[in-house]
Image (tube, rainbow, N blue to C red; front, side, top):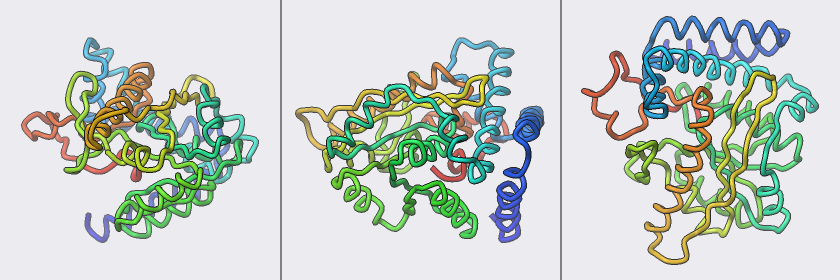
Length: 315
């Protein structure tokens, strides 16, 4: 990205956070829907990739159903951004009433016992809102990791934004994040990581909707090393302003096998839990990038899709 492009990106995010959060909620909702519909009609790289990914999730969908699903997906994606821009201005009461989570005892029981808990999520729903709900409604601090972005000022905006919501944010690069996360978990703390996409050489291959993808090894390795409970979480929107979610039962560490074998089994279990939530609410899976290994072949890309990077700027 050119320096001018970086500056423009940073400026646009700044406008979003400074302007959108001041709009009345009905106005923000209408604006978000209009922006989403316009982006969907333009059929840009992100929309094409989203539609190709959804075709794997819903393989029996015909062209019309897939188009309707991708349109709903763009509305969900823009809803994430509009809510995120507005979160710093939301009252504690608005955040507390804006989220309903099933299976909460899976998390609270682990933390009450003094055992650390590691929550792993896909790019589903609005995890920033879920994080704010954890810190404001449950009064539980937690640690997460953010991908370094260009320009650096944009990364600083994301860190300040999430810290303002009560999160401890570590940089993804630099080599120290894993050790800090392990210390937080050993101390009985909470760690939350978005974990449905990893294109690095260290990613674990999993079967995901019938094809091979890579997901990060970190959550399984941290659970093995610290004894923390590994909890898959899926989120979704419905027609109300409330976001719903489910904390799935813990992923157990296998009793036998090498560390690599245990990591593979546990990461597959995470992928299976993610797939359950995504299959139930595919329109809320904001994966506008390539995920499956077969799709990394440029010859198999939808026209115009060369985009890289994470779905929402930072995991």
